Picture 1: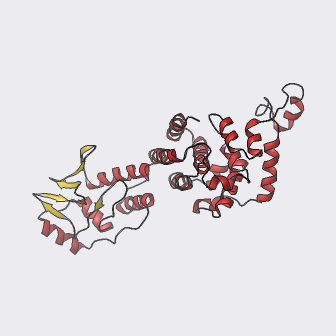
Picture 2: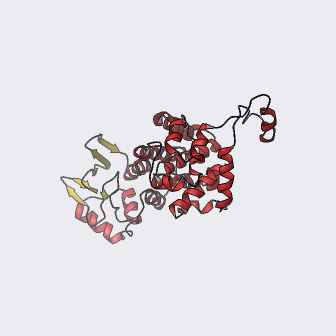
Picture 3: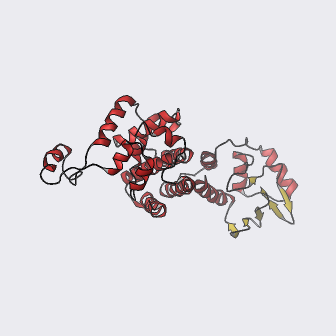
Length: 320
């Protein structure tokens, strides 16, 4: 498959398509990541989809083959992620027999055109059935032949639902060679979900909760009014109201993949009239403005401390 073209189309759908199409794209992408052995990325994508859309996770596996695929992968992994609690339990022995019959079933040009009950009868005269090379490869357990024949939109659900192959996928066989691309795929789709379903960050606790949801971990406890006032006296400046609200919510934040450590009241310092808000000193308070100094992207002047953290949350959604 052309991974670049696929991801471009998937991101476009997440940004613009109706919700059933979004669910279909995210469900397919999550399975695609899983069969590449990138289970952490698949779990991260599904978890962020849940947070953004608040729709039941069963919407990602509405197709019985997708539901079967996840069940087989969970069995092979020996564990179910938290997000999978919303998927119904399945009888895996029955699912295995059903899937084996599906892989052996011949296909016809009438598949998808006529109701399933009519295809077999009409196909005898109009469009004779023939073996499906892709499914035959799965039935034989030949991953290399499947990958070679899979086409531009591989049927990863049928692959993962093949019980005999699920342990090989879990072990990291990566038949499509997509493992290194997986973080890019997950990050782009999560960023698109973040844009399509922007969180309500009306209060500081909500914004901090959003950041912690993306990065994990916990925030330090709030600073006291006395500690905030003591810091202002030491710095010789009055902190902006939104920065004071941040400190009242959490007294600093540890660093993550896109942002430096945000300093608490005890570590704030002033240099030549500029208050250093982070370590390293890339976030500064100067003349009432928050200045972000990036050695690659240059200097950005944010209208407020809150605006800087809002931008940080958007970048974090894409990077984590």
